[in-house]
Image (cartoon, rainbow, N blue to C red):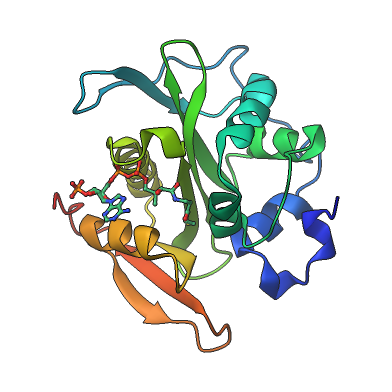
Length: 209
Ligand SMILES: CC(C)(COP(=O)(O)OP(=O)(O)OC[C@H]1O[C@@H](n2cnc3c(N)ncnc32)[C@H](O)[C@@H]1OP(=O)(O)O)[C@@H](O)C(=O)NCCC(=O)NCCS
């Protein structure tokens, strides 16, 4: 199987390239809780209960199972690359976030299965952060993506960030519509044809519709 690191940098999402270049274990010592936090309760429109919480190193096997539930197209949209599986090394990088560099959250169902994931990484300059989000296709349209974005926005504001931005394939109409409904603006990436940049200004409230 080709690994994501085979692809040129511009063929991957930048959040993805940061993940693949992060050392495992992380270079700087961290004070992580021994177990995942409980996080926030979430009840979706259909009455189902979930929790939105910070990602944790113990999430590696659940992340690998969650990856298997994604469609190949979703994987390409999230990583800008085709992958058949999430290796244990990649899952470990996903699950181990240095808080000095960014933040990552998962939405977990009553059985402890991961049904969505979102993260941001601070820009080295500019006061913003790049975000990415993905949810289980079987639960699309239930509000999991919006809940994850709300959690990212709260944390980004707490850190004093001015905006979140993401790179989206131009044909990814689902994500573009999702971003528009949150209140994000769009701009073309002049150096990356076929890619659109979406930007959420954190001084404004998340749009409801
Ligand atoms: C985009 C994505 C995250 C949306 O997740 P989701 O859990 O289905 O989103 P939600 O149910 O929270 O929907 C939030 C809003 O987006 C809208 N939306 C979601 N999917 C939509 C679609 N296919 N078409 C139109 N609108 C859509 C919903 O109507 C909802 O609007 P509202 O809250 O104003 O009613 C999910 O489809 C996904 O994982 N896509 C693949 C990964 C990806 O492309 N990531 C982008 C890289 S950053």
